[in-house]
Image 1 (cartoon, rainbow, N blue to C red):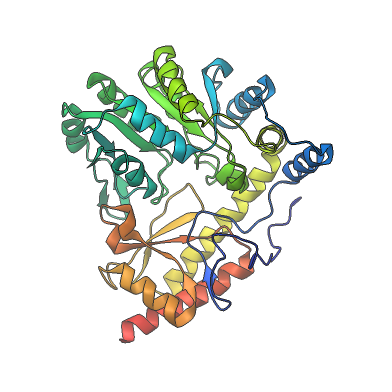
Image 2 (cartoon, one colour):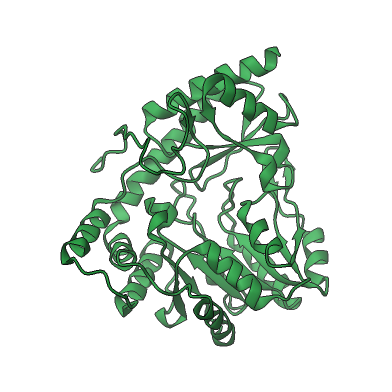
Length: 388
């Protein structure tokens, strides 16, 4: 490999949210990787820093052209730069869109179990969470299409937040599924906000499909959010892009992000994103090989050492969803025991809604040595829990 994904970097006492833990603890919870970002990004930031002046920044055409280049070359979708708007993050953009596209008291549809911050963006803005829970059968998750159609048809449902690919279950939505969803949403006058922040991180042969790319119905009735933050581990740069082909919808969202001051970049966001999207492809390809290998290591370890756990075979994200029903239906208590007895910090699934209380989520975006440490701790913690 050209890049080193085995380096054991000490991130303690660096103001890292992930690593704000006790000295004996190992955090494998929040979606934050333990790999250094792509060298091209570091070089771009250093070059910017060398200028020594950090005044107000504009978003140049080159930024949007870099986003277009990335999606054309990596995901077979060529979005027009005129459709794009810079924002300081996907989550702030979701909250802004909730306020702009729906009304107080409306239903905002999600597919649980799903990224828990979606709920905050809905409830904190006076809307109602309307859950179309995914169906878990034979180790896989699928859409309950009858339930989805009924809930989209509810007159109070005006917005759906789609997680594409899906976090935490790691599902890569297929074009036929996305087209069916798009047709139902359009027929019921429900706008789709597609969070595609995990789209770059997939197993070989399982690339994701941008929602707006699958049909005209999808493109003309959606807001797509993308960002280098998860892909390149640069969340603190606060850079994301909204892609909105429909001009009327784009203008409405545009007014929201401007009135809420979400469209002004920091000094490093623009050059770092341009470097990522124009020079970072090889780094991401090697990253994905590393993550796939780590997921395979975890799966094999659990099969051999923890037969009461069952790994959900998702092909996207570096977050692994694990079925713990044969151990407990209260994975919060399970995670508490694991952390107290071994120091391993993983996420109990209840926060994601749906059937999440039966699952845990583990972040495997770390060097193989650190992953093995985490797996050994997981085994110790599970055995301790089962003996109680």
